[in-house]
Amino acid sequence: MVDMIVRVLLNKFDCIILIDGQRGLGKSTLAHVLAKRVANRMAYIRRNYKTEMKVGDYSFLPKRDLIYRREKVIEYFNQWKRIGIADEMINVTFNRDFYQEDQKNLIKMMNMNRDHCNLFIACVPQFQTMDSQIKGLTKIRLSVVRRGLAIIQTQNQSIYSTDKWDSANNQKIEREWMASGSKNPRYTRLTTFRGVMKFPDLSPKDREEYERIKIDERNIIAETEMNINQKREPFDELMFSLENKGIKNIDVLRGFAVANQMDYKNLRRKMVTKLRKEGKPDKINDYFWDGEDSKEIKADKTNKSLAALGRYEG
Image (cartoon, rainbow, N blue to C red; front, side, top):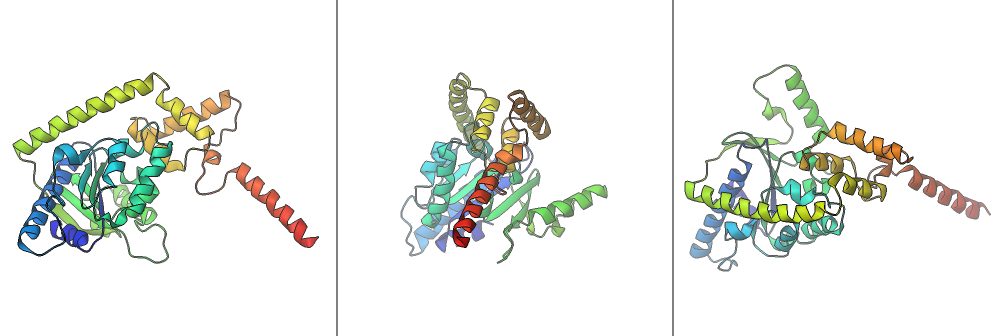
């Protein structure tokens, strides 16, 4: 895996990796191990071969390169030949002010700076809750299924399909083996399956450093969240965004539910109840600005089309 990542970077491509899996299985551990080993390999190549790399390119400094805040992620994507780990990416992309300009800027930066040859590793609880554009930019998906073991997946190389991760088909395959009561998941049947990888634990020294950085960063985030709480509650932020056409699609709601530890169905019911109390239309999907047009937009387009047709016939 380290060799493959290094080849991608030396071929002047960026490399975005998403690591998903249940809490406590070792997503952060795997990210840390990969980052450190890639940094060591790059240092070896820089010392022994003629390359365009400078001293410091692809170095891994946990204090600098473990990222927990969105503004730091945006700063990271402005750099060249850097390693970065978004240890809690769900909070970066789906926190309570996700609808604001920073969310758009983050995706814009990820798209614009793809030639910066960066290695970006993000840890998320559920791959499917991520923004579709971020999933599209992901080169490698590592699903940690138990401690020390990850499933390797990559996009299918298709010129027609818009879903390179073949999500619908893979969900169907997964449901089939779950319905059969199989105790041994058949990951090899997934169309994006590429292999299995074992990974070690962190050394005690690395573990201690990682935990210290995580606690410090979470304290900063907690202080920021406290200030936000004084202004508006997360659910109120969500409804404000929904009613002002600030939510792209259903994935945003799922991500919000995960980030705020809420049941998705209960969240939908709560949203519908609030809309009805306010005397507003309660079909949540009609408020989205992605995918199918809302009723208001459809009506507007129809009126414009009829007007254009009338001018043409006239």
